Length: 103
Image (tube, rainbow, N blue to C red; front, side, top):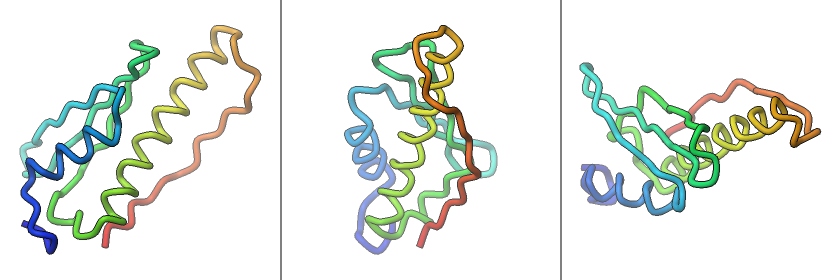
């Protein structure tokens, strides 16, 4: 449990609700960490994964929000790239390096 007294199941539910209407799937890796795979509800071919998540590092609401923001941002980049390849978007593509700051 973290300092808020939330279980892993409750944290997963918060993340899933925050990412609606997109579909979210959690997978536990062999080292006890988790990965989240998010599939866009509007662009089913667009899917991203955020790997290496340790739920004990999600100690604050800010850390949870940063994880959700990272997933949303990566999914938006993926959708943007997909639209650009199909000629439906003239937005510039950029993929900055993201660093998690869970505290």
